[in-house]
Amino acid sequence: MHRHGVKRFRHPDIGVLDLAYEAFDLPGDEVLTLLTYSAEPGTPSGDGLELLASWAAGDVDGPVDGPGDRRAALPSPEKQSG
Image (cartoon, rainbow, N blue to C red; front, side, top):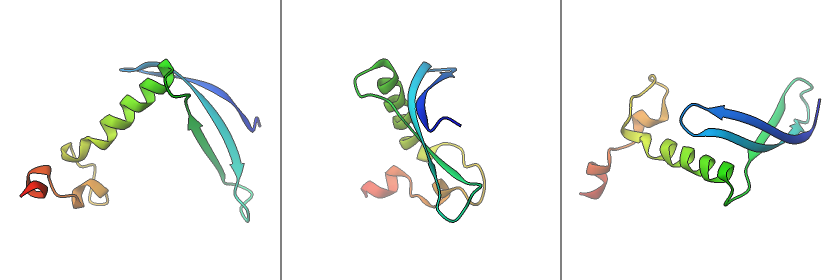
């Protein structure tokens, strides 16, 4: 397995994202591996990743996926300001 490199993703709304990745083995568990992905700021991939992050951060009022969804416990912005 490659331990680091670049992987290309094709997002339906954002387009192509070329993300650098690193793989880390977790001590004490031979099966699990932690993968991190990042993009260079200011590049098309970096801008796309930031846009996706902003959508995820701003979606607290969106649909709740189930009872364990953390968004269900967050107050709406109207309740926070008053």
